[in-house]
Structures are given as C-alpha cells and as structure tokens.
Amino acid sequence: MRPHCVFLRKGCILPDCLAPQREPIGGNWALVEDLSAPVLDGMIRKAGWHFMWIQGSCSRRGLGFTRDDAAGRALARALTGIASRFNAAELDSVQDVKYPGFHIANVTLQPRQIQQLTSLETFDETPPQVNAPR
Image (cartoon, rainbow, N blue to C red):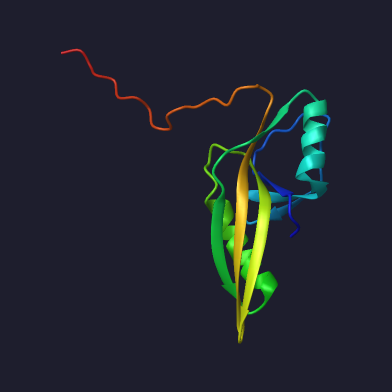
C-alpha cells in the first residue's frame, strides 16, 4: 500500500472513458492499480465529473505477525468504517509499530465521492414516517 492509493466501493460508477485496473479487496472494495489519487482526480475532472474530498477521516488499527499482515487487517477495518453513501476512499497514511513478535498498524483513510453532479446530495437513509389519515 502506498499513500494516496484509491479504493473504489463495489458498484462505483466511473465516467465511460475510465476503466482502471482494479484488484478486489474483500467483498465490497477494490484497489485502483497504478493510479494515485491526484492522477485519478485529473482524469475524472477531464471527463467532466467530480472527485470530491469528504471531511472526516477514518482510522483503524490492526495486529499481525508482520507489518503487511497488520496493515492489511487495519485496512480492512478502516474500509468498513467508510460511510456507505461514499463510493471511494483514499489512503492517507499507514503507521506501524513493531513489538517483539508482532506489529500494530494504524491505517487512515479519507472518504471520497466520485460523481457526475457538482453537489453532494444528502439524504436521510431511513424512509420518512407517513401518518395515515384517521
């Protein structure tokens, strides 16, 4: 994992002109191969779409016998912490602390949203209650 790599949620729609290689990560996410966030951002904007930076990072820790194991577990946990309404995430940082026999990694992701519209739609994820007439 390298800083500024991008993860796309399963079902993320991209402009027709973009078809980056993706490596599945778990059941709901895929790593965009060979494109950093700034490069992908430029490509998306060139297509007339938007790659929005969402406030509020998500950090999680993972434990493993190696740095990669710990980072992989922390990444999996961080991806589940990204709100379901956002379709992408950017890796901000991976920090690792080595102890005798194991590693603890801390992964921080920044939520992102890829969409054609300029405004981020907000909606209540629960349907409104309708009062039936008496």
